[in-house]
Length: 253
Image (cartoon, rainbow, N blue to C red):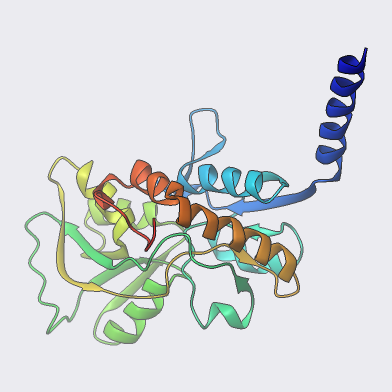
């Protein structure tokens, strides 16, 4: 009888914990594989979805994912339409003027240029070229500052649209995260290649939160730090970004 009472109490405790869990809505772009994308069922999938689910489990949060276009993802966070951004977003001083970030869950990653294989680009005297970027990214800002004026900077809603115009010959070169480009090059059958210098931008990728949500930020940061310490974050990164192997990626991971 005592065992039955104990079992019933355990079940009730579990239900109570679940009922008291803080409900968190996480926004992602759903168009930046392998960081985040929509699977065959139209549901968010990828590195950040796996990571978000694990962070929520560790932080005792009840989380759901929703898709939001990149160009409005920060304004909609500030407006309260969701609580967290996990969308391959680099931590920058400019963005920190509007929102706050957790510690990074992906280390600073060089940006790369990709072109149609065989395209000759002189980055020391770049002029008259069409340069594709995803609008509102750190790469867009860098391209405008570095190459604007003598070149045309074409900003696209998604990185995949920039890639499509590169394949169609409408842009000469695309600048994007190296982790994104490496997947494109590997799957291009030799049609796309990386050229030019690497460009280091940002302070790694983190989860964005409203400035007032310090408790939520700290809970997620603690969970990220724990995953770094036990090596599970390294393992998850290597699962989705095999070119990062061998690890460890984070110190102590």
